[in-house]
Amino acid sequence: MKAFVHRGQVTKVVFGRGTRGSVHDEVALLGCERMVVLSTPGQARQAAETGDLLGAATAGYFAEAAMHTPVEVTEKAVAYARSVRADGVLTVGGGSTIGLGKAITARTGLPQLALPTTYAGSEATPILGETEGARKTTRRLPEVLPRTVVYDVDLTLTLPPAAAAVSGVNALAHAVEALYAQDHDPIANLMAGEAVDALIRSLPAVIRRPDDPEARAGALYGAWLAGSCLGSVGMALHHKVCHVLGGTFNLPHAETHTVVLPHVLAFNSAAAPDAVERVGRALPGSEGGTAAALYDFVGELGAPRALRDLGMPEAGIEQAADLIVQNTYWNPRPVDRSSARALLTRAWAGERPAA
Figure 1: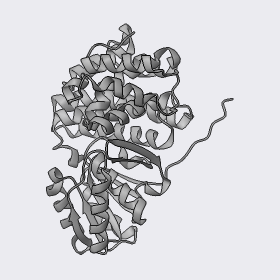
Figure 2: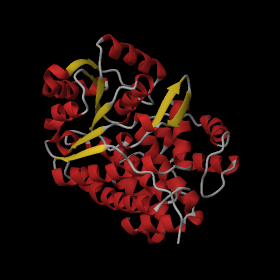
Figure 3: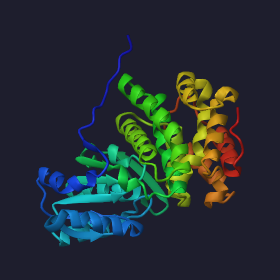
Figure 4: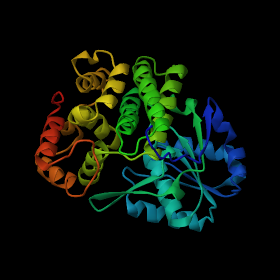
């Protein structure tokens, strides 16, 4: 018998096509009457359409959500929410927008209803990551978990294939790390395995047929499961590396996860053979090594495979290696500066993962 502790989620999930039409009723069930609708500048139109569905329950719009949740943006959003006497936040978008909603909730206690438009998975976690200056910090706060998440497959149909690819591999990273997490449990393992299968099966179809609702539904389903894993168990080296790179060099979030994941999987392979075997089951061509097969899979999606292509300077490798080993962070295989530097060097150059 293996002893374990499972942390269950308390979020209500509404999944399907056309489910955005239920947001007015879901807001009423939260007991809210004045929702501030959040988005990035690029998704202001979708936010406005959602606000139209809310009608009189829309208190206003804040369309300045930004990558890595900068504290200065959050402070501005909190001031705006208070100025319109909002009693809740409705987030329309991906990790940047949902992260802003969490940051507002952490400071005000306002409940959040999320309408994800990407595969980021932030809506399924109580994790709040914020950036101040050039430093990104993360906290696990149960109170910031969205009360309700409305997954509308139709909202993802306009997500460009290139963005869908990196967003989907970002979700895949949550599931992969859940399989070897220090506190993994049977439920998390089942969700993670199902998420890996769904994402690896669906993402190529999304790239080939962007308007295929079945492919989009499969990817969104996998992303929900992967995000739920991220919310219920701890993560390891992969997320540490990506938080360092994102916060220090302002690299794009999903793209960074996409580049780094095969290299971390290769590094952890010997220490987490069961997890690697489970991922390999879903990947075609994994006989040559699961990490290499994942690297090839990313390439087939047309996604980036080199940190230098994301704007990371080569000189930043040394700084990032220092930061990765600066604070204790559990991982199935111990990490020292030399191994962190080697991993970063290969990821920066876009080389195949080390065996």
